[in-house]
Length: 344
Ligand SMILES: Cc1ncc(COP(=O)(O)O)c(C=O)c1O
Image (cartoon, helix red, strand yellow):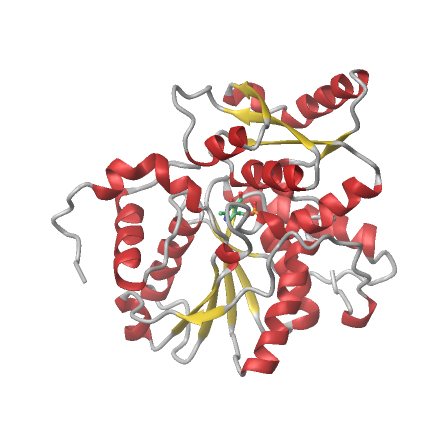
């Protein structure tokens, strides 16, 4: 799909996200970057807000503008028990005077921690589904929407991760922001890299890059799904976006750069190496990655640099998509003594 800059009509948006977010050179990066002659910058989308921070806020800027335009009063969405998206949606809805109902994958934990704690604190009502029931989440969302409507509420349904064509505008807009920052602050990136879960962040960046950053390759690092499944999801998002927002533009087949080598045992099964990298980066650089998305994606990026994927002189921009609250349930393992840990 080819977007054309001047032709992109941005839909109405709210200003929930604190943007533009800074771009910073990562001082003291892990050794492979220096050895490969590759510079690594961080797009600090972990700073899109306080408790309501991370990549999802950018999508909600557009999605909740639509919800308000439709005079909805309840946000209805879904995700894992540890979902950043559900936490962000709940806090955003509260700020707008709306209620939230969440369909969550997993069991009700004995103690609500991390993202779930924040969602409950901000007043979300919650239904817990087993992983097999969660597989039919879109139907469950539709049933919940009918139920809420029969109770006199006006629900606004947001799919998992806020990843639908309208949500893609969040990262399309972020690509425009990166292009502006490149022009005005003198950066030149060769690659933009992000964690890819439900695919909307990568799809949005790809759509935006086609117009605003045509020389830049957007790379997603799959953190959870089967590679072919996520690839297909992203392809569908690109296609649906084009059909809905630029039907007159000829499609173009930009390949989807998705790295699937770091999924390991799947969503949320953080490896010892990922935990170690999170600790090392926190100690060396003050940058806090999360165990599910950014920790996995950054560890994958380090490995790709080590494997020689990027030519010397490459300038990489890693989009730090947030997820801080997801760290807290892992406090014990993160603070456990690790003899291989390199102290600053
Ligand atoms: C912190 C964080 N990073 C990255 C992602 C992946 O974004 P997407 O679902 O748009 O692929 C998510 C999704 O939940 C997230 O919470």
